[in-house]
Length: 110
Image 1 (cartoon, rainbow, N blue to C red):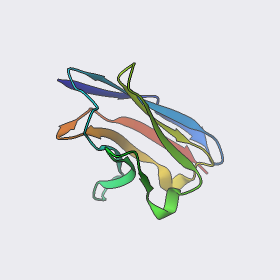
Image 2: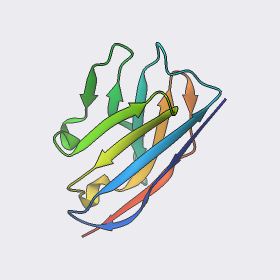
Image 3: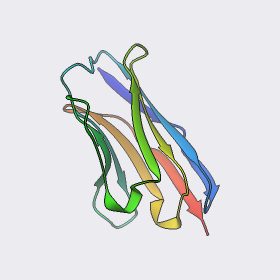
């Protein structure tokens, strides 16, 4: 059972990144899928969620800029991040049910 996030990097403000989360040994069926982030010195916070029924929810600060999606056939989930801001910087983690993946670092320069 494993999740592995990737796709982070250094980007200028206004740029875009697409994070990917590869799942192995986990079925997406019936589970909520969430992207979290944690900035230095701050608590981990949810950024975007896709619930088992298909509904999506976003943190107010990322609405209209971030899009969560999944490809169940490939056991992948994604986070498309556009219009990035310095305050979006942090380590991003994917979560499916009770399983957490290793994070990927996103740094947005001003």
